[in-house]
Every structure is written in C-alpha cells, then in structure tokens.
Image 1 (cartoon, rainbow, N blue to C red):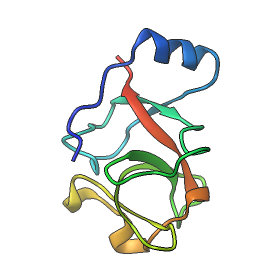
Image 2: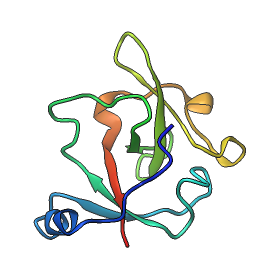
Image 3: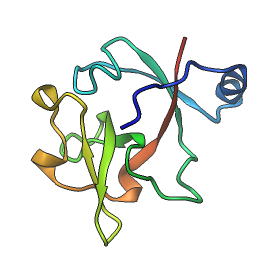
Image 4: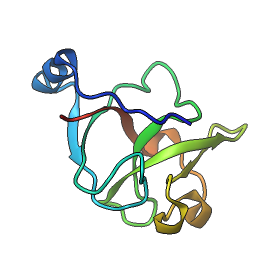
Length: 117
C-alpha cells in the first residue's frame, strides 16, 4: 500500500494552471490516515486514457448511488472483466465497494497525483 502522497511540484502547479489537473478538497475520514478531512489534492483526469488503473492507485470516482458526489478511494482489486473494487483506508468510516460493489473505468474521474501544499 502506498503510504506517501507527494506534495505538489512546480510541474503539477503548471498542469493545474493549464487545466490538466483538478483541485479537490477531502471531506470525509474514509481515507485516513493517508488523507485527512481538509486536505487538498490534485487529480489527473487524463491518467487512465492510455493505461488502466492499477492496484493501490488512489482514484477519484463518481459515487455509484449519489450521482453528483465524487469520492476518493484506493483500487484494492481488479476483476477479470476490468471492474474495480475500491476501498477506503479507514474501513470503519468508509462506504466503498464492500457496500455498493465494483465500478467501471468510465466511473473513475482520475488519479490523485499529489497533496496540494
């Protein structure tokens, strides 16, 4: 499991200014201790246009039951049909694939690339 998310580099800041990254704020506790409420992250919405997500990637995805909500989860498993099992690092505080099942690639918004600092 990846345990360090790099701070935003100048290159990542440039990509944000060029609208190649999205800036989001973490709200819940589901990814603690990796991400805390109030942390700001940068997301690469183009990360999976050439290569699919891999196990341990931190991704932003559409919530399967609340369409307008985006959530941050870790890719824990990939089935043979290319569906992704996503979990929070804090299982007590996380609603994830254990509750709503797997998600498809089209539901994944992007890959978390850095902590905005």
